[in-house]
Length: 258
Ligand code: FES
Image 1: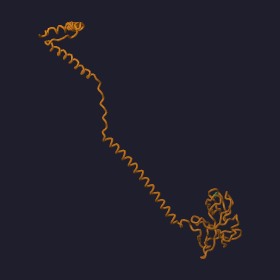
Image 2 (image 1 turned 180 degrees about the vertical axis):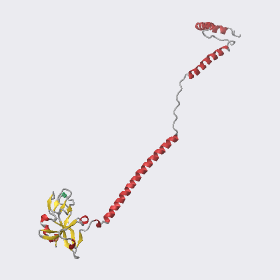
Image 3 (image 1 turned 90 degrees about the vertical axis):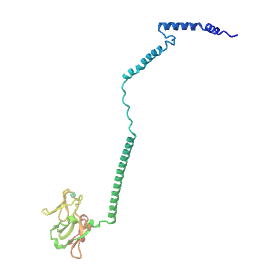
Image 4 (image 1 turned 180 degrees about the horizontal axis):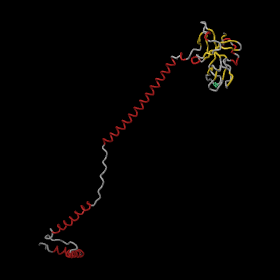
């Protein structure tokens, strides 16, 4: 015997919960009032996508209005090209190379100048200019060229000597006076009108024979050795000097009698 298929739906309907039945009724009631969409039949189905499309279009169209009122952002800064960085690095290297080159050039120049000066000094040391200094011995001519009472000043610049023919303690002598003030070393001037040596620095005065008589000079002028050379000329030797205060003017090598 075949089972009656109509029994199953009856069982299912009887087994359905009471709350579900009540919900379906409430849904249908809400659909009729229009507050909540209810179940749709196949005949009404096309109408719903239109409503959904309308709602979607409303939702989709909203963003453009939002974009229109959005603030305009400033453009992003453009990153410098890598080539510019390379150029800057190259410029920096060039500057450093130039600075280093200048420094080395200056150093080599200073080194060259130092070497040159050292070479000149060495050459000067190896070959001294002995002729720069005047000889300590020199001839000034015959005694006839120095008349009595005369102070010869023409050897002052070259030899630093006055050649004098004068009376000294009752004896006529020719002697050579050193042109150095005994105060602080200035060079006095011979004043023919006043017949004295006068120092321009502090005013010391010396008689014709070299004895000090005014100013701060503490002692007489000095004499150099003098003699008659083999050729008859007077020869002065600056390598030897004679001090009056020491009694050395009495030495016959400090004068020539006339
Ligand atoms: S140096 Fe001659 S008076 Fe002073």
